[in-house]
Structures are given as structure tokens and as C-alpha cells.
Length: 245
Image 1 (cartoon, rainbow, N blue to C red):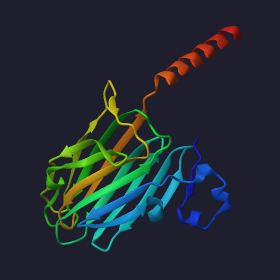
Image 2: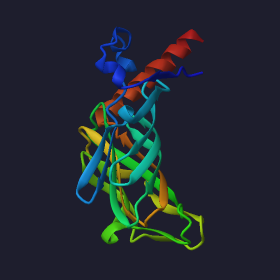
Image 3: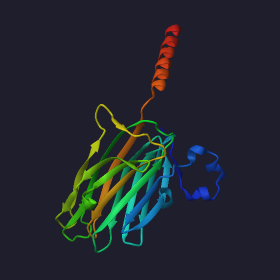
Image 4: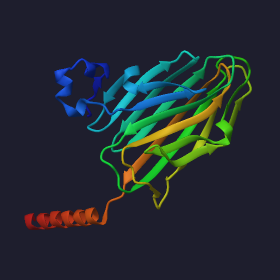
């Protein structure tokens, strides 16, 4: 059974000797940013909620954020700097006008990856939250709703030219945004030096809500030297077992 340790980023600024003396207690710098009409808000995710350590390398972030321009959102994400990002966030446009958003989630990775394979997936739900009888979520300027990023550069995108609608008061519709890298052979990705991330770009109708569940995984490709060492280790282990027998 995994031990769960709950910490809050604000504790680190207080110089807690107990937490700072254990490097594995320090959560990764998981960031979120919301961009709308040239205005950005957000920051360290754990400054807007809590983070639980659920394994030696995995952290579970939960939080809420509201800004002064009429946007509110909440999220639940499991991340691993070794690395993957998976979770759900919901956003509500609490204004009287449709608004375009860019929402970024970014995670520092460790160690760097010289060569990777990548995979990802997304789905969502659109809700008429104000009971007006209609709601819409479209991709902004015909682009992709979901974009996987490595070192801030595009890796793969999903759900281009999206146009999701609801036509009943307080109605809801669910949609699939697709996936990549799910089959064999694995989908080759780039070298990754510092961060992975997921970007959502969409336009949401006034007074309505949308939620997205998503995942982005990057796996290192073993180098020929590492493969050879793995084979030698396996042979040594088998020889040891034979001698024991």
C-alpha cells in the first residue's frame, strides 16, 4: 500500500525543516496558466490547492482558481517528472460574452530524455450551465483543442476544427477528442530537455462550462549501450540462478 503525504507549497516558504530535509517530499513545479484576451493568470498549481505524494515519483494536484475577468476553473492532475501528465480540469465562463481561452499545464522532467516515444488522449464534456438553452465549445481559429508540448514545442495535436454544441437548458454533451501513439510500433517523439505540457485552446459560450480529461506520456528510448547492459544483467542473473540450483 502506498503512503500518501499531503503538503502545500506555502509550507516551503516557511522553512519547514521536516519537509526540506526530505528531497522526495518536495513536489515538482507543476504550473498552470490561463490566457484570455491578452491577460494571463495562474502559477504554481499547489499555491491554488493541495498536492499529495502518492508514490516515490508521482504527485496528485487538486485546486481551484478564479480571476477578475469572470473565469473560474478547478483541476485534478496526477503527474510524474519521469514523465507523464494525466487528469481533468473544468472551466466556466461566468460572463455575458463568449470568450477564447488558452490553458497550459506544464511539468519539469527529470532526467532529460535523449530520444522518446509519446502517447496521448483526450475527451471532454460541454454543459449549458446558465440554462439559456444552448452552449458551444469550438477550437479557436480552426486550430487544435489539445496540443502536447515538449520543451514548449508542439509534439502532437488533437481535435482540430472542433464544434461541440448543446441545445437544451442545462443540457450536457460528451465528446471524444481522439488519441495518438496508442498502437505498435510506438510513436517516435523528440528529445526532451526540461518540460512536458498540455495546452488547451478553445472558445466557450457565455455562462457555460467545459471539462477536459487528458493524458500525455513520454517514454525514453533505451540507447544501444543501455540495451546491451540490460542483456548482460539478465544473463548474469540467469547464471546466478543456475549455480544456485
